[in-house]
Image (tube, rainbow, N blue to C red; front, side):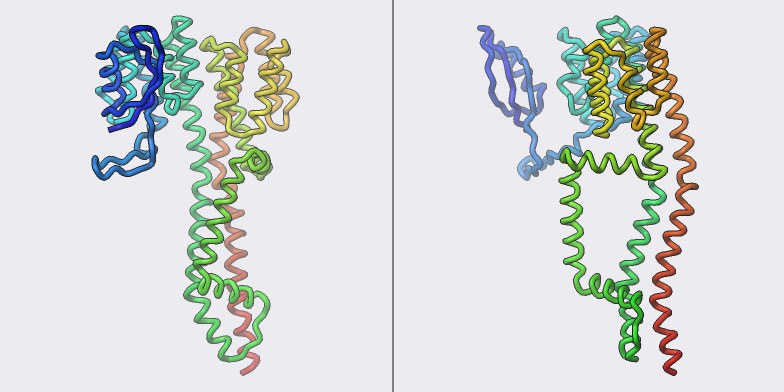
Length: 407
């Protein structure tokens, strides 16, 4: 049983807001319709709690819709509409095909709303946590232009390219991350079990320990005797960092620092350039207003410094300035090539096509660089690992030389 907060209109025309329990939103629709009332808005009141009575768990991660599921939705719906299927029937077919329980509920709701005369974009607006503003805006533009199938295919391609770009960058970072985690685990095990045994021997022989050995001994004692304190302190520091990183001041510093990281910073810049170009191109080609396109693109981009550039671009367009002007003035973030291609697009009236070409260029470049990243990072990792192993070896071997001199 779920708890809903809803707004409805009585047969007399009076609009009111109330709350009610129902199995799902569809049962709520049915109950209110039988009472002669019209539902205007429904929101489910969710909580991270366990209901022992109904043995149901209400947690957000159990109600998620994966990106690939949304990509398939856009592609399949576009193909079915192109094939001549009615919207309601196409949604019904996809509802029977999908195995995702949350997506199945969404498709049932969309089918019901469309059957009642609502447009698909309005029906999708009830699921803002699933369908982004980019998705709904492109669908709305397709409905207005009478080319919904093409808009759905474009948004499907747009999401697929962004998703692929994210996976490539994450995949490139996987190798160094695994190496560093393995090093930390091995270091903790050695400091906890191996170092104390060696140090006990050195201490019994009253050897003069060098500075490097004393440092290893101090670290070993800290991890072994105060491991819980170290763990809790680390957890608190990480938690404080996460909270700070979500604030405006934290985002400004962290996002700026990421762009300055060698190798990675350059790839992040090209990723943002590709995402900006493809999103703007998709929206403009779908018939979305240029100011609205820039606003939606700003929501898609995560880095606050790029968001600021796009916000300036939106304000410049309202004043009558060309959009390319802002991008050429911010070449430290966006490559000059992007601004110049925008300028050419504005002059020829083919800015959407020009931006798509830029997006493809930088996506291909990012793909190649992410493939080479493991090869580029590997020497740095080897040097780092060698330095760490060498330091530990020197710290352990130095006292042995002192022991040989004593003998």
